[in-house]
Length: 205
Ligand code: ITT
Image (cartoon, rainbow, N blue to C red; front, side, top):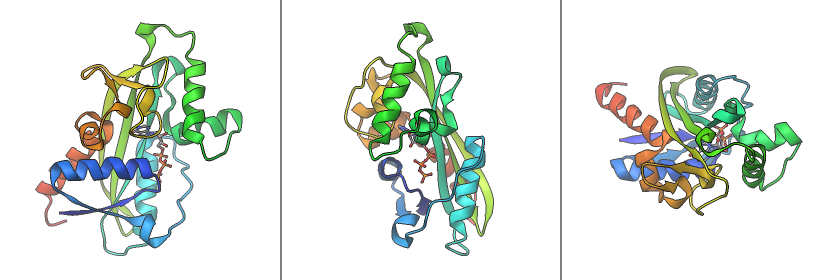
């Protein structure tokens, strides 16, 4: 089994490699070897953006199945922000655009939550994977991970909001896990397992 993933995000690639290793699947990454410019993500939902990206990238590899990922962090106390704007939260909110955007995003979420007390510090990561061929989406897969937003950052693995996302079941943040471990608990791992189940049942696709 071999999966072609279209993402420009190195953190997602690391997660996918971890999940693929756990499940004995092989992975290729599309924009890397084709040098494709990412599309503008104009959708208002994770599902819409996942479809948009999978369809866009699939035009570059005729007749092949392409997998795209749209994901983000929903913080309940922030009315589910940053949500679909997770990647560019600090850009949209305070006009920041620079190489350490992940650090700025984290700092901004922590700052906006400084008066939010323990029981209200809930949130979840959401991931939607879309599988497309020749500009048409064939299936989508949803995954979620429920957790708590810490007051400080912990751990140095992972990417994005991982260091503030505490997963109570294991008493660690996602940034304290290896890619393989993260895939057991994460939104991306959950969606990926649904994709593999689907692939088992649709081998003619
Ligand atoms: P592609 O569209 O090229 O895949 P992107 O980074 O633009 O890459 P998204 O629009 O889906 O992707 O934004 C996802 C953002 O959500 C990401 O940049 C992180 O800030 C956050 N995020 C998603 N999954 C995450 C995870 O597992 N751990 C930490 N942060 C995550």
